[in-house]
Length: 582
DNA sequence: GCCGTTTTCGGCCCGACTGTTTTCAGTCG
Image (cartoon, rainbow, N blue to C red; front, side, top):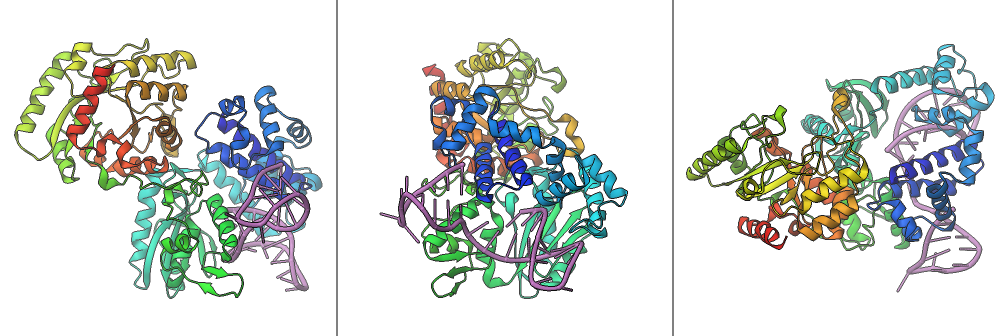
């Protein structure tokens, strides 16, 4: 059982106890906090259990540690067994319908015998919900609409970052055109740059609320207004995403931005700390408990300062130790000096080498690495050894033009199903920097695919292991192209990369983001170095770098551990040194 | 159920909006 599966069981356990309605609500909070921690863990839960270190996980005490142990050894524990016997799974699934919480689910299950989302829909359509306690005709209609919307959106209830980011900033630009708007920002998981986004949260400060709300709900992207109050409105876009807008008075900006950026768990920890310092914190201000005096924070930074904390960047606000560990200066986009994965018209890209070089120069880069595909990847027009030699001549010619950016020759070399590489050692030695990656036979079983990758990582000519897991995460409309990553032993991969000085890539392409944040953090803890590359297939895609930087920041990366922040001579020395060492 | 520069018991973050209500419960974040 992996981390995500164990996490899910604790979420479901809390849901079942919630429906049952007998358990102390703080116990539910405890189970949910642990579920959240498990989902955010950067090490394998089985390894932690074997080491007897379960209680080192925040929120895990004696009782939950025993439950996890039992779960990993036997697949269940007694409380879970009992609840699963007593509560049909369809009843729990009703909680996924918006406006259906534990109280309503329990009431409809026990009083009306409704045991699934399908039965809930039938009952609502038959008019059998209205009239029951707390339910009227409006809620009945809403539940039908909610079920329909859920069906329409399908399994993908979260929006990939690469889609949500431009969408949200487009809306924000429109809101900033409203004359009375003073400041505006994205908030929530989007500001934290999570790889997928639930709702898009926007925050605006203005002295007057109504004109902003009016502009918001009338934006052309809005399909439906879900809620509209004096400080907050929620809408659904034609593209399906829910967007929440909060409008606050200018003096509240700092507290409000902090509050609406979350995460929820981060905020709970922060407010606990505030209480210990004698303040109550809400989205408007810090309030001194002893005399009720409000302390306004015009800037978000002041909230942390007044509580005696360093500023915690949004990407770290996940209750993953950010209050207990020293917060380093994280890498920034401006630290990036070059891009070390891109494709050109030589293989499956649509931009020439020279155009890529010019695009990189425009972004202020000092160097780029051309990494067209190797020969066996036929669908991408991968390069034969002969064409690779011809490409070198073109690169030399581009460098001779003095564009102000150094073009290096590399390749994205396929790690074939048997673990061998797609070019001879002699060919690899002729390249400046070599990437190796998986595109085929991703579904090999755990040990086989891990060994295959380990042999590539240990090849002295391989400098970078690119998009390590191979996962793809397309938006819902294109979900058929999505796929989970290979079943790799990441601990073994990280250990081998450290040993061989092989660099691990964070692929900044929005449908990859691979390594993800948790893997990046673990890789850094183990001692590996990273590279952030766009994998651009045209010069516009070089602009995806900021997504990769965000993932690195979420992994607590400093610039020094990311090799494409280094000057070129340091980078080249490093990769040649690693060749010699191995 | 967890936890402790208010430690082994008594606390546990804080508020907005809707619908169904005559003052609030339920849901959501």
